[in-house]
Amino acid sequence: DVKVTQSSRYLVKRTGEKVFLECVQDMDHENMFWYRQDPGLGLRLIYFSYDVKMKEKGDIPEGYSVSREKKERFSLILESASTNQTSMYLCASKIIAEGGDGYTFGSGTRLTVV
Amino acid sequence: AQSVTQLDSQVPVFEEAPVELRCNYSSSVSVYLFWYVQYPNQGLQLLLKYLSGSTLVKGINGFEAEFNKSQTSFHLRKPSVHISDTAEYFCAVSEALGAGGFKTIFGAGTRLFVKA
Image (cartoon, rainbow over all chains, first blue to last red; front, side):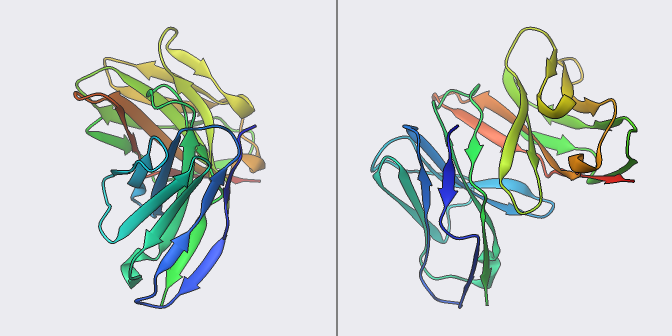
């Protein structure tokens, strides 16, 4: 089975810190995604990538950036963490970009910004 | 899809009872439909999906869902739930974009709580 691994399950960071969330997938998936999950709002897409060094903004990219230097790794960066970025962050990958393919999700990183 | 609505935020049910989790969507194009399950402190797992063909699709753990195009619904059902089905369930809709590519929208989630 494809496995998507997020390096941290829980993180606590201070306001203004630069935060890196790491995600690695162990299959040859070209497509990787970062979502944030908030109660009552479901999942909202932050950024996605269809290939190495390629990135596209999702629905809520403000305050975030991403890096895809290798096919298996997709990093989410909070340039200057703020309390409204306290959330659950989910990384996902999929084999093809075509809409009929489902996502494989990581276990999530629960980030608290204080 | 312009929107995905999960009509119930929480559904309490007794063990061995049937359950239906409701999902409606709005879209002007053909869509692909998904249900995901999230157990506590875990990521989402794909439960089932509808791409085309038979409108009744079966997934893992005894769940099934029925696509109703006229009502733009994709409700999830299980005839007899177990305590272990306690989780949050997300409906998702994927539709083609005019310029190519696909966009997936998730519902807000339904928390299923199975009581002994």
